[in-house]
Length: 124
Image 1 (cartoon, rainbow, N blue to C red):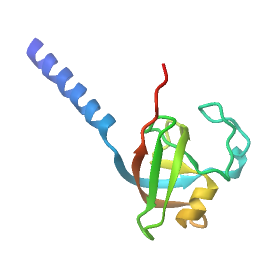
Image 2: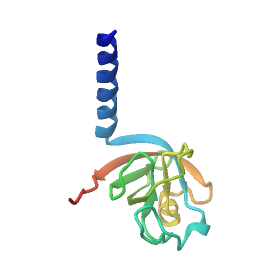
Image 3: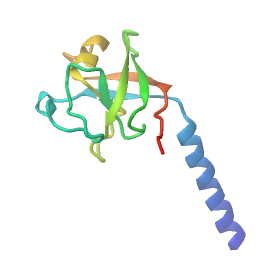
Image 4: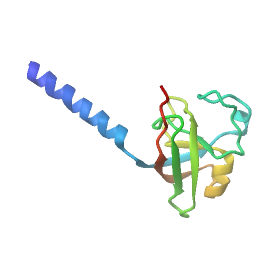
């Protein structure tokens, strides 16, 4: 029984390590509603829909990612400066400016691929 528990714990630890080292994902992107413009983000900055920023529940705040619209291959690099609502199943929520560059502003959502460009830096 102890061996089984040890194996399960080891497997869980290895699977969480694999998730943290992943550098690319595909999923659905949306963009911030204009009502959030001027409100504080998770990192304390004031959100501005004109800047190239985004929210994600998978990535650390401070991480730069390249977001690619898989339908038209347009891309933009954004800075993760916020987290989404915990129940949000989307991959990323970008600013309106980023949605316009990616070409999905009128549709509201699109299928994207995101790739980490630069990990966040932890300052001690």
